[in-house]
Image 1 (cartoon, rainbow, N blue to C red):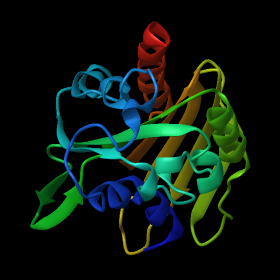
Image 2 (cartoon, one colour):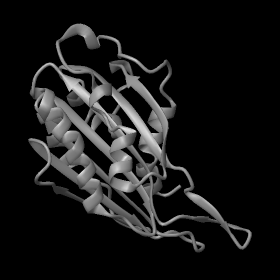
Image 3 (cartoon, one colour):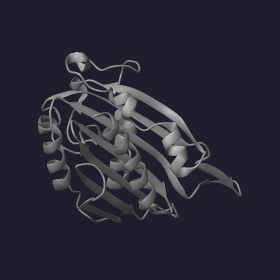
Length: 221
């Protein structure tokens, strides 16, 4: 697995390793706030932006003991910064129903978005989210071996936002892989959205989904 695949799989691997059931993470009731589960990406959000060919895959709470760095769970920040005043969080993932098809007996991927995961973390104050975004803008993976990775501030989403975009030219005729991670903070919340795509990537749609989540948080914070 190359570096891009490792980054793109962060959300899936982190989520699948989380034990327990859907619900509030340990300690989440320690402060008054809207549950991250209620603010995270909904299936209706994904279908509104990308169409009806997507389904729910998983959703789980993220207690503090499962925070490590850097990962999609922390917004690509250090564990120390991600845990600063953190109350709890939630991760959800949606995948394309027919992401792969058989073409002349060979497995082929369908162009476009294959999966999207969302992580919402809640904090006691704005200190933690501010640190997370600072780290997100500093995080980077070196280019090379077919991988092109870029980090830049993203305007128009949250109080502050970072966009990580990457392209990986695959060997042996495998379609080019595209991905993006949008990380933003809004008040006492941080959001990390991880997009994985093949052959083509619509950044405008990714930003549109981020704005839907941002507006949901703005209404309740």
